[in-house]
Length: 245
Image (cartoon, rainbow, N blue to C red; front, side, top):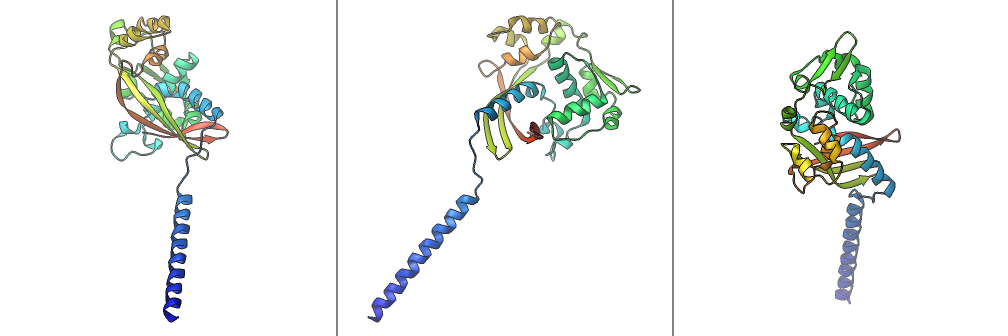
C-alpha cells in the first residue's frame, strides 16, 4: 500500500512537472515578437514611399561612414544635402533649395534632425563639388547644376536602383529589404529597358532626369551590389526612415 502511495505521489510530481514545463514553453512562445501580416493599404503606402525616396539613397547609407556608424545622425550633413537636391530635382523639378527647405525635406523622410546653421556651415565639400553642387552662404542656398555634363561624363556615372524584396511589420514599425542593383554605364539601362525609352534617351543626352534610368535597372542584367535593409515607422500618420544599412 505504501509503495502504491509513493508511486502515486511520484506520478503526480511528474504530471506537475510536465504542466510547469508546458506553461514555461507557452510563456516563452508568447514573449517572442510575432510578425504580423501587412495589410494591402500598408503595402501600397510603403511601395509608394519607396518609389519616391529610395532611388536617390546611395549617399544615405551607414556603410559609407565606416565602422561604428549605426545611427542616421552618424551620416555626414553633406550627404543629406546631396540627397535633398537629387530628390528635389528629380521629383519636383527644383534644382535650388534653401537650408530651411533642405532641413524640412530631410525631416519629412528621415528620423533625424538638422538645423539651418549646420547645413549652411558645410559649404562645398569634395562630395558636393563632385556632384556639381553650388552654395550661396549669404542666402543659405544650395543648388545642383545638371547642365554641365557631357555625354561622355554621363556615360561614366554609375547608376543604381533599389528593388524592394520584402516587407515585415511589428506594430507600427516596418523592416523593408531591398536588393541594390547597379550598372557602371547607364547605356546598359537603355539597351535593356522595357519602357520609357524617351526618358532614358533624354538623360543620356544631358536633357533629362535619372529617374527613368534607375527604374529600368533590375536583376535581369545589372549587378547586385548588396542587400539593403531599411527600418521605417509611422510618425504623425506618415512613414519615416529610422535606419538604413
